[in-house]
Picture 1 (tube, rainbow over the protein chains, first blue to last red):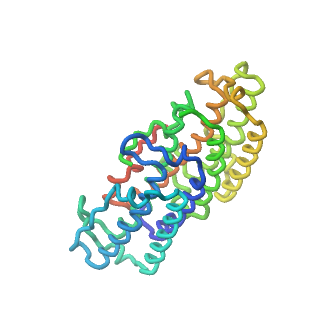
Picture 2: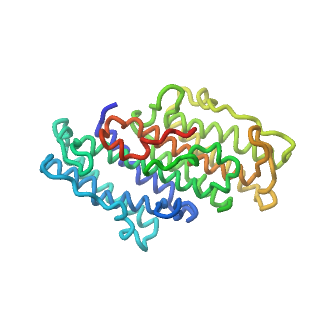
Length: 179
Length: 179
């Protein structure tokens, strides 16, 4: 299946409300615990989504539209959210996510991208040529990868509580596969 | 970490609204496609959650409270949702989920379960003795395992669209591990 920008935008529009409905005012058991040293809690994951909203997706898209492949994307800091989220409540970080995502989607809609622009190439620091279409599709799929991770992190907190059922819960067999 | 019933109820309360915010009116690309033969779409997963809400969690909890370990849980049909969801819209199935979940949580709250009741054992057809506490914790963790699965199924639809980024998206490396 190819990429339809409207489908990406439809998903990107819904993620903040879905995370809000799932996480706001949920006990810390679910939101503030991680999977161990150098891993992320649900709180950290929302912070990461905010951080990339500011530093990754739109700066890279603008670079493609302006400079094509002549300039390489700036790397982003995988731990950049830690300082940004420090001392904030989960509610604050959820609010920030909703706001910055809405602003970014307004900007992207304003570009009125057609097939020719979506096919424009940019240069990724690790794997070279990518199209604007691939970047924007990844923006949406990246929401899903972190929802996937978040459900695993949350389920991890119930590993003991579920007793023998752990063997039947796929999420508790997930090895993390990088996110 | 042990099990706190209030924490399970807090999560169980939020899942229908989270799924509603994520899925309602989303293009069929995301909600009606699966991962191939004998796999589930996001639509199917919501149907499965409704089906178990009716046939699994509360019937088993009631059986433990009434008969303890003397009676074995009735097995449930892993494909029982197919007939139930047939011809319905995703919006209808989301509405059903919200309604039956709310009814079930009202019933469980009404039981005013204390530690002695939560420690009561029941008999699972596959792995024998489980406590009411483990059953109710699994009810919550089961929401997470299917959210985990759903994000993987949805991301699968973008495998081509993201191009070389697929290698960086953990959700696209997930082998399914049973759900």
